[in-house]
Amino acid sequence: MFAVSELLERINSHIAGLQFSRSPQGLYDPITYVLSMGGKRIRPVLMLMAYNLYKDDVARIFDVATGIEVYHNYTLLHDDLMDKADRRRGKETVHKVWGDNAAILSGDAMLVLAYQFMAKCPEEHLKEVMDVFSLTALEICEGQQLDMEFERRKDVKEEEYLEMIRLKTSVLLAASLKIGALLGGASPEDANRLYDFGMNLGVAFQLKDDFLDVYGDPAVFGKNIGGDILCNKKTYMLIKAFEHAADSQRGELDGWVDAESFNPTEKIAAVTNLYNQIGVRKLCEEKMQEYCERAAGSLAAVCVSDEKKAGLKELMESLMHRNV
Image 1 (cartoon, rainbow, N blue to C red):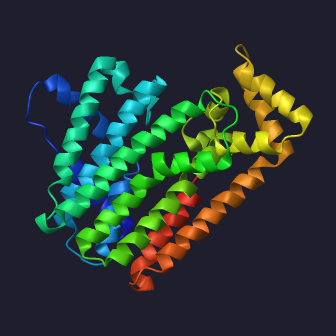
Image 2 (cartoon, rainbow, N blue to C red; image 1 turned 60 degrees about the vertical axis):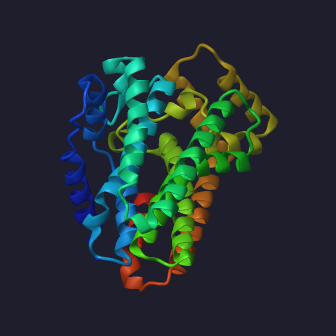
């Protein structure tokens, strides 16, 4: 079994070695730029880990793992454009460097490239892999649309939010694991258990992001705390605050959410104080734990030795105990 650090190093090296020889250069420069930003590479590493549960020749699926990472970065490129975000991983976003039109077009090219990389899987697995990948890509679009629609609503329910993050975040983690398992020769049952593991892990992962945006340490988190509060993002935290607030607290929350002019520092402090009063921190921690336990149960049911599954279990714990 390969260590997570070794798989990360090897897939990073593979992606760094990519060369897009086609022209025009103006289409491919933004793609190279996006992929050079690095990141956690969680999705390709998960795919390689799932494959490695059954087979050792992980290099055989480096192209497929690259496809999942290219696809993920394509979604980030378009997310940054839709959100008008200026920075990603400490660097200027593509639309800030090359403009909106170039970001759209280079993103579209990344989607095509992702499919080309994914199609480099062994022919006997081509249909099932592409079926999983295509459905996942469609579901992510559905999740993004829900996220956009939630921006205009103040009545988003917990179950709606959890479904949105399942579609927007979790399905790609789940698909990475399932595709890796299928390519490794796992049984359909094991492939589905690993999919469920990734699905539950993904929900817990996003809830952790919500949590860190309010309660993280800015020096460690790598970005300013309270960004979700400032843009009234319908996170689990805000949804549960509205659900459990007393009348006076609800009135104060409404005031901050509806305010068109405000001092950012004051708004973050006031809303965080309301979260503390209402008990939102504990509610979010409990929900994270619930999904972690579901993920652990799905992983435990996978029919390989505990020794082989130890890496996935450790990765889950590290993601949930992270501060960034």
